[in-house]
Amino acid sequence: MKVKRWKGMLPTYAPHLFDHKKHRWDEIAQASCQAELVHETIILLSFVPIVFSIWAGAIMVFTITSVLAAAFDMTFVIIQRYNRTRIVGLMER
Image (cartoon, helix red, strand yellow):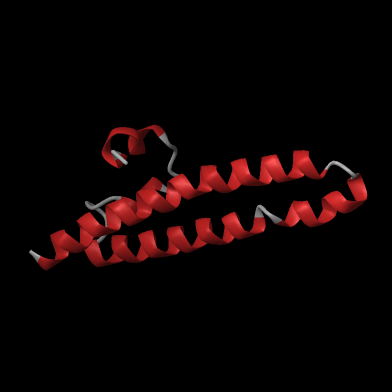
């Protein structure tokens, strides 16, 4: 997926949590797990508006926007998994 090429183009909400000069690697790995969980929860919640589309009558619009929002957040999950694998490798050395 060539994550290394595009991961720097996406924003980081709290970059200080991932700063290796301020935190130990195990703390950074923990922050990565928490960030991934947050984004996975957001992915699930992005499909909630589809339920409400029944009253609005525009189910296709709600479905398309929900899928796009989930895909966008999935990129953050991919980045967290990519980075955590590298962090764990650093910790093992």
